[in-house]
Amino acid sequence: MGVRRMTAAVVVESGDELGECPVWDPVRSELLWTDIHGRRLHRLTSDGVAVELALDDRLCSFAVAGGGDLVAAFTKRVARLDRDTGAVRELHGVEIDLAATRCNDGRPDRHGGFVFGTMDEQHDPHQPLGSFYHWDVDRGPAVIHSGVAIANGLCFSPDGLTIHYADSPLATIWQARYEPGSGQVHEARVLVGPDPEIPGDTGSPDGSAVDESGCIWNARWGAWGIARFTPDGVLDTIVDVPVPQPSAVTFGGDDLDTLFITTAREHMSPSDPRYELSGALFAVTPGVTGIADTPVRL
Image 1 (cartoon, rainbow, N blue to C red):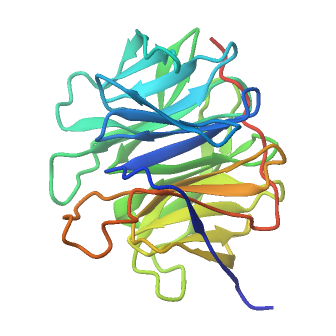
Image 2: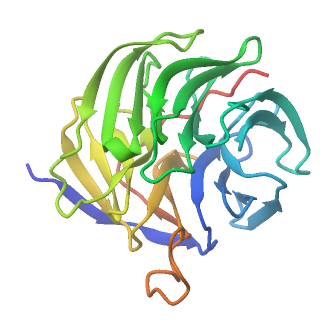
């Protein structure tokens, strides 16, 4: 059986410089995502209205907490964010002594914690200065894996006992046993290496989501698409996206049967023919369903 192929369509022309971290909130039936460099939080409400909230800091990733507020990884801190008013209450600083890094990809685990990573944004090539962290309300951020250039690809198996994560410059996705509570990882192995044999793919792994079968849907930055890998790392589906920089994915909709895709205009000029649709929110109905996020404990 060959690789399935499908195409995503535009949902909102949001024009994000760096759209990231789509999150579905089943309580409010709305999709949220961030434009990191644009310092904006987007919401697509249940009636199809797109709402934009301006922020004072770069919102890099976030998760919905019990009660509806967001646990948010800003540039150099974890904070509590009110999505309606924009009010921010700082909870913990992150890598304050490392000027070259900022927070990046993040996702709730299935046990009430929030896992996020950091990245080097000052060197070319990116240096392994970042880390992955597990955050909970009792202990704050604790390092679970270090030596990372650009932390990405965080997602969890349906039972929450396996974590997947990527370092984008290494073009590698790892799989490891995940310890609930502490967030520690064990027995890491390469799931998808730097040559995944995706037709036409010259990109790198960005944000990911897991469906109900435990398959990983990974945004391929620079490669115009999303790749689905089985839990054993076998490619079985490609979603073509009509812009080169898809950045992250999540399942949403009331039946969790829509795959939403954020994209970016980063490194493009308005004269670039790819610019107009880049930074938009896209979606596809892939014929599978996702898994609802567990609210982070606050």
